[in-house]
Length: 193
Image (cartoon, rainbow, N blue to C red; front, side):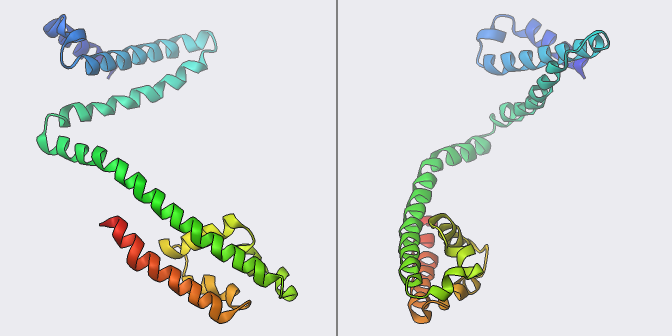
């Protein structure tokens, strides 16, 4: 394949001459030239490998894989492809904003649940060593992850509620129900819209 790549570079350079480096496709041409040169270096390294240790050149193989990025050059000539890429790029900022809003809401609910668990555990000394409760709600990080599992479908929220029901059945049922209703029927659909 390396010989084919070298021939392709030679033909393109012969046809395009100065526009090879300064034309409208100059960036792709330079990229292809670099990938081809690295391929040549790799073959030379394989030949010289018998006479010395130059294993660091093997790391250059990954750059040859980047040659597949040329598909964007060909596909970039299609209006539909450019339209889809433009939509993805333009939609990136609103998606980040939506994720930030979701994280802020999750943070506030986690803070309320964690503080409520701490306040109730002070009154129930027997539950301070409950393994399920400690595993799911012993810190802010574990509480946040548990609440994230609830809204993302990672775990059944009914199962995650069971350790909290040992502390205060109706208090945490109400809190969890409100959390699920707000996130599943208000925040998430609003963000997706």
